[in-house]
Image 1 (cartoon, one colour):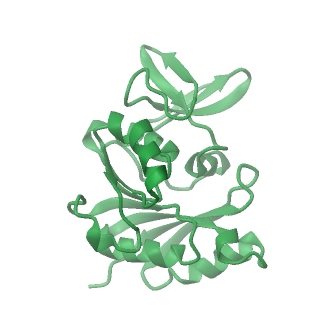
Image 2 (cartoon, helix red, strand yellow):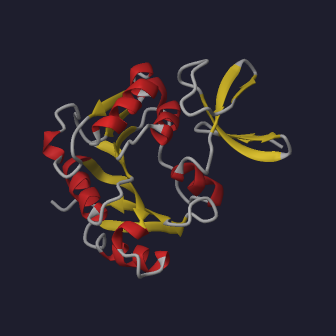
Image 3 (cartoon, rainbow, N blue to C red):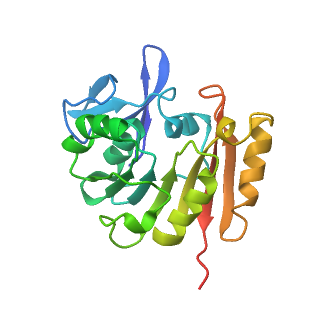
Length: 226
């Protein structure tokens, strides 16, 4: 069985349903993922155990506003696994502003991802200081935040207020153990969602089990106050 839309494709390989994106840089891999060719188009298999966004798609996202031409601000790019697949999806008319603060990780990100993809703009800054992102222009359609800090939700909100357009979407990955090890992941997610109530409409929340036991994801729509 195969199914596909304009953003990604589901394949049946080796008896398993697999998620894949059209490769922005043909022949290039980022983290050892498999390549697959169909109708002369090369796809990269998207591993839900390596990417929390892929895990969320496997579990079942209600909305997926990232498509061809989307502008994304990505906080916590790390070595670029998920950034690379978003780069595949937004394509030549989209752009991914990718923020990473840790210098060693940022070097890996540049070597593996940013140096090969013209639609990825690396920003080597602390996400706590969005006014220092001199490379970002205009408002973005989506803010994707994956920062393992106790104040990760506050950091995401500050970035949304600076760069997310009215009606845009926040994808907030919550590392529950970075916030409170004594609470269950579901309770931590509920607590973080309350911080969004002033400017956001919660669309969906989920834990990422069985792919990741300590993370959750909240998808919210931003309503800027005039």
